[in-house]
Image 1 (tube, rainbow, N blue to C red):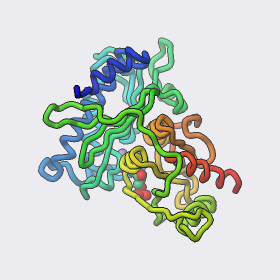
Image 2: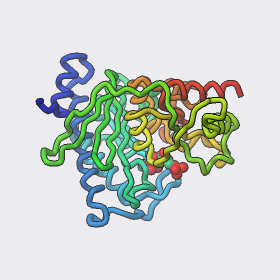
Image 3: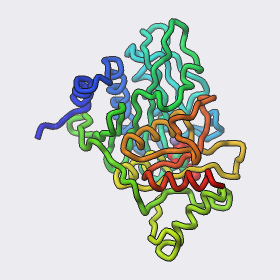
Image 4: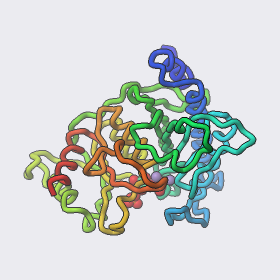
Length: 334
Ligand code: AHG
Ligand code: MN
Ligand code: MN
C-alpha cells in the first residue's frame, strides 16, 4: 500500500473538501516540521542538555522548563517568516507575537501550548505540543490581542503532536480527526489513522484524585459513583488513568475512549480551572467533538465559550459522550 504523507493528505483534503487553502497548508506543514524539531530535542533528553528548569516563570506563575522555552522558540522561528501568519500566541509568552515587519503578513493566527505536560519532561513520560488556528478578522487594521478572542467553534484547524514511544501528529480541519505517525527514517509524518471515533460509553476516567477534597459536590458525586463499581448505582466497575499530560490523556481517549476531567476546585476558587481555554481546551474540545465525543466546562459546550483573555482558564470535561453528558447534568442540577 502506498504511504500517504501529511503533504499528500493536505493536498487531497483541499481537493475533496476545499478546507485547506495554500496558506493554511503551509501553516500546518510548518507546524508539523517544528514538531519534528521539538521531537528531536525531546529524544535527546539529558544528552542534549534539555532537561530541567530554565529558572524563569511564565505569566501564569509557573516555573518554565528548558524544553518549554526551546519548544516555544522552535515554533516561533519556524512560523514567523512563511507569510502565512499575522501573529502567534503561546502559553509561554505574556502577550501576542506579531509577525515582524520584515516578513509578509498572512491571514491566520496561531496559538500553542509549546510543551504540554512539563512536569513529565524530566521523568521520561509522554508530553506534547497543542495548537489552534484561527482566521484573523477581515480588515486592514493591525493585528491585536482582541483578534484572538474568538470562540473555539471558529477554529479552522487544531491538533497536537505527542512525543511518546511514537511521535504522532493528530489533526482536524473540521472533517474528522486523522493521525500521522512520524517515520524517523523518512523524516515525514505518515497517515496511520483516519476518522478516529471515541465510543459513547466508557468505564475509564482520568482526574487528579489528590484534589478530591477541593472538588465541587457534582464532581465528587460522579467519581464516588464510579468508585462504587458493580455494587454502586452505575452497576459496573471503572478503571482510572491519569498521566498528567493533557496530550497523553486525550490521546488515550481518542484511541480507546474514556473521560478526562480537570474541573474547577476550591484550591484557587477565583480561577475557572487549571487548563487554558485558548490553547489547551479549545483545540482538544474540537478534536474530541470531531471524533464523536463531547467537551464542556461542566455546564456549557467549551467551543461556545467567548474568551475574554488570552490566558483565560477553564474547567474541562471531555471524552466519551454519555459520560460527559452525565457529569454536565450533575453540575446543572446541583
Ligand atoms: P503545562 O505543562 O502546559 O503547564 O500543562 C500541564 C497541565 C496538563 O497537561 C495536565 O493535564 C495538568 O496540567 C496536570 O496537572 P496536575 O499537576 O494537577 O497533575
Ligand atoms: Mn499544557
Ligand atoms: Mn505547556
